[in-house]
Length: 89
Image (tube, rainbow, N blue to C red; front, side):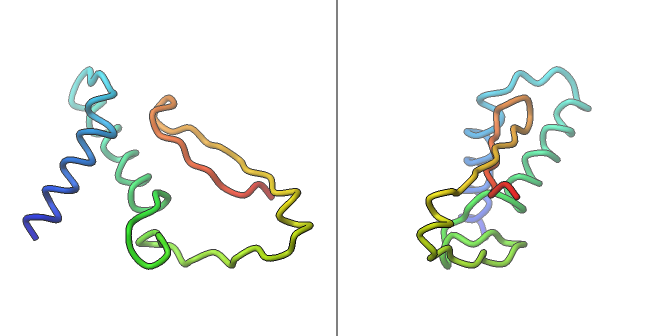
């Protein structure tokens, strides 16, 4: 468990705290909630097909016509520090 927490803290520091100027405790708590949501709900992880912990794997796209017209939507979180990419409907 110690190695998992060390990896979490290192990732948290490099991806969030090293890039953000924290103003006060409420700002820190907001940034931490946003990062945890990004980390658990959206970010790809090492594991089975880079599956997110709380989301099922998406169906693979094999149709060439659909692949050629793939539309990607980008959403910025924490004022552009974190980026999330999804297929646009």
